[in-house]
Length: 296
Image (cartoon, rainbow, N blue to C red; front, side):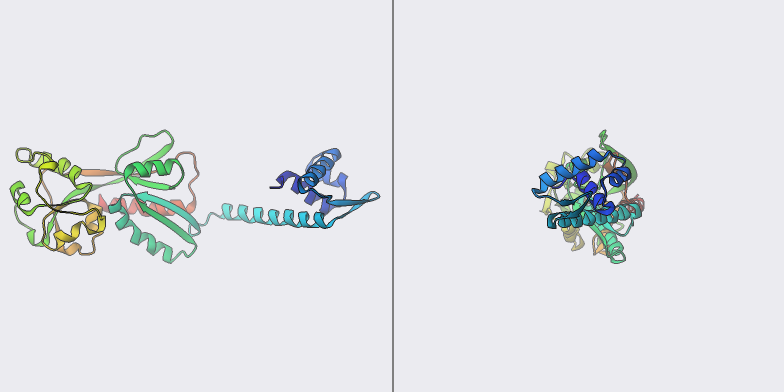
């Protein structure tokens, strides 16, 4: 790649047509201009000018290099204009969050992109460890996690919380909930369901609950969007964050039961510390904040 400083010196030389005026314009010495020219010619491997007394003319290679320099100038000017403008509806944003939060967030992102054809948003559902690692190595611009990471290279903002829900078929609304009754139904299990059970049932059924590994499992699935489906069909019960319930298309076929001891998961937005937030990222951040507030 041609040295950008030497290339710019050469372009100015072609514009002024004079070594002394080039030096004055660039706040250099005349020997410095000559040195840049020699170094650039060494990089190209050909002479760029042919001297004619005190003046010079461009060689074919010189004209090609001049045109390249002018093109790079234009590209840099365009880049500076784009950066300075910082349009919230133009550019790319990469977001990572849990599967349940992604299900609720993605339709809103799509609605936003419909009105912003030049806005590109990548949303990835991934475990917490992957979210934190991805933000740290700049694969994600924004992450949403369930607890503050406490990392020195991350900025973290508490944006809300969401309840951990006991989910039953809509037909069970109003029924008294007992641990034995839940065991009779059986758990629609999923990868996070066991930890959710330990978290929610230990406080609410301390005498009967002996650990998630002892629960009666009715069926098991690892696709977040399908977890509530058996329950909507009257089969078993499950445990999900509020976002996973609200995102389910057949929400009216479910009911959530409020136990005496409720559990909530905090929601934190994380980003790399020291990186200026673009207008498009700020716009997506506002969208995430509003969603988190609705869940709280």
